[in-house]
Image 1 (cartoon, helix red, strand yellow):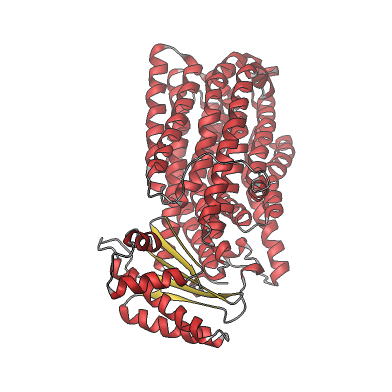
Image 2 (cartoon, rainbow, N blue to C red; image 1 turned 45 degrees about the vertical axis):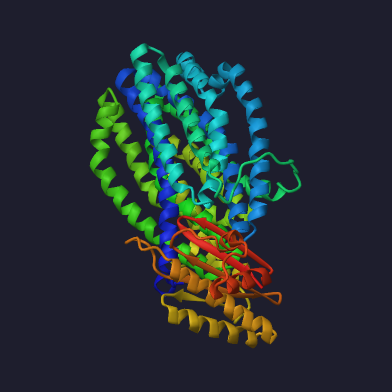
Amino acid sequence: MKSDRIYISKIQKRMFFLAFATAFIAAFTQTMAVLVDKVIVCAFYGEKEIASMALASPFFYMLEIPAAGLAAGIQAVCAKHLGAGQIGRVNRLFNQIFFLAAIVLTVLTALSFVSVPQMAVLFGARGRTAALHPYASQYLFGLSFEILPYVLFCIATPVVILDNGGRLISIASACGCVTDIVLDLLSVKFGWGLTGIGMATSASAVVYFLGIMLHFLKPERIIRLRPVRIRLTELKEMFVCAPPKAFLSLADVLRSAVFITLVSVTGGVAGTCVLSIHETIAYTLTIFSTGVAGAVGVLAGICFGEKNRDELEGVGALAHRYGLILSAGVVVIMAVLVRPLSAALTESRETASLLVFALCTATVMFPFSILVHARISYLQAVGQVKTAQMAAVAVNLIFPVAGAALLSIPFGIKGVFIALPLSQIMSLFVSWVKHSRQTGKTCPAGADYLEVDESFDLKPGDVISYPIKTMEDCALASEQVGMFCRGHKLDERKSLFAGLCTEELTTNVLEKRSERPLAIKTADIRIVIDAGDVVIRVRDGGDSFNLKRFSDRLDGQDHTQAGVSRRILLTSAKSVSYYKTYGMNTTIMRI
């Protein structure tokens, strides 16, 4: 499969870019808050405080277990149902998981308050690093307030994005980042120590959460927040899709604990300080991986709901293309910044030299990290949960821990840092070998790491899709759809009706298309024969326009030919669904 043979529409490119931008901005602002914490601690405190923040890093990963797992499960399931036009089911599932999580997280927050000293010891404040216990305890206490708002924010984020609320997420994340920075500086000024730094991070999570809740106050939103009866049987599918990302975070916890032990033994407090800074920079670099993986996950989920292999292959090609561009840019930037950054963040020449080496390994790891994260998101979105789970555990736990244990013997603390990029490379190598055996390709193309599943293949001739640019295209599409339906032995009435619906939907899109300079002026149509029904999907980049809601508001007052014909089509169809995500309108009609 070569990317230049894959048709990628303007709408698909725009959706991928906006999906990437939304995930990137949210991750960037949150990561910047963590990075600023480290910078402020480096500037105003000493190496013990910096090292103690490394001991608290497993807490972040533990927090990510429910946050990343549930968010990924929600994204995979809701994107699939949204792609199939099942808006009501998306609403019901989201509300159940949101309120169930709120109850459970309240209990976990209370438990974390009383177990802070034990957590500090568990995370590594013992042996050669026992002196770090009071600092780590202070920081962990402040972070405990973050559990409830941060996880609920992560749970709501994928649904808000699917409901075209990506801009609000970016604004909320930016406001949270600013809040964290301001409170960090106030903490230093008033002498609140690491407890104040941790509390600032928790306060920023509250801002994230309250900001994103504003989305549900607008009545025109498709997704609504309201109490519903919790039925665990309905949530089963969501819980099944959650383990891969949850295991990814659990693997992070275990890997981080092992790495802290290895580094404290081979490098002491100085090595732990370098590990703390390395983790922060590496986490900062993963915001790009998060952006690409987020775009792949949500668009693959929508394609899965549509059984749309063509667009899925386009998603793989775009992920590969943007991954190469981002990798080149990051490598150049890190090559310029690695030495001055190391000198600014450390106190001794030996520590700075070790940090230079650690940051170089983080830079080498980055390109492979993009592909690994995108592949795990894809596998989860298309229901290959076990494969995604195995890949997550292998790349974040088995390969790095085994590599670090073996390489630390001949190379000491440097071997621990070398193990990280090697684990990413090994994961991709294993997946490519597996894919080569399955497909018979001796040299898979770049986008083949997505391993397109055979379930995306419709019967030959059961689907047609192409862009609509002019009114003449609308008329031609109507005729082609009619012939398409007749060719599948559908009755004349349904064939004629499908053609009329196609013309009405596409004509309406072109008439209502936005005049904004950057707006996409075309529409993509996709017609599928499914169990004797005709499923028509029209997607465009114009202004919001819910055809069904618009027709309901007319309430018989529009007696023009267009108004009457529109109501006849809508009332005669089996179902009509509308949603808008990443600025793109999607209307799905089944007849």
